[in-house]
Picture (cartoon, rainbow, N blue to C red):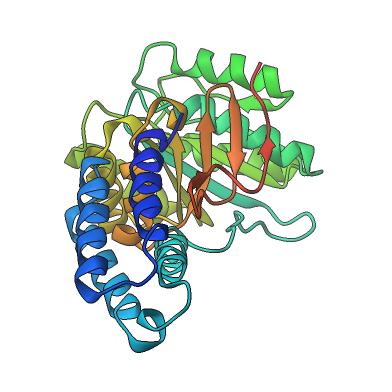
Length: 304
């Protein structure tokens, strides 16, 4: 399960802190050094760890904490609050236009991250909330990409708009939006092409789509199991095309959790949803006083 390894290490560190009646500055610094190592071993971005420890230390090494009747608990509370701040303390939902106005969402990501499946799940979530979503098959390169989207769309009961592989993605997107206008859809989700790695052609195509079409939300799908690679991918996409949020997939297979803890701090963009096995969860991964309490805000749009 996500964060199991990090949770165990933090619990042991906190246990030692709680066992001390009084704390010295040296005690706090020793504990924070252990926290730093635990975060680095969890594959959290080095710069993020450095800033995190600095923020905790500035708050923890103070007269109010040191002279408290329960200094250990106060230090744990500070670590917890800074961890929540690191990941974002509030749930960020995807902003949709009101009424029958069409919201256009562009999905981006590398091959293998689960972008197409996630795109269909997202459409299912919107449908469950009373929206009328349309999926647009804009990946004309990967074999069977259109069929995969169609199958996943059927699972969610959502229509898929396709023009085959002989049209360019911009024309497909424009036609999908026109189809949405003609048939009273109010959300259009563009499933764009992925690549095996970040390349200029991929970025140029996404930039072209955004130049030609009024995209309201650009959402990046990344595989959390790739650790720091996921963070680097998110930073590159944000720099090149601009993203509004991130969806992390396969978080149940990532026992370290470094990508989840780093992405918001590195990009400044929220983690909107996380993929946990067949489930699609939303909200924030919040650390509790004894480790991580996974996914405060529940589940939605399960896949079959």
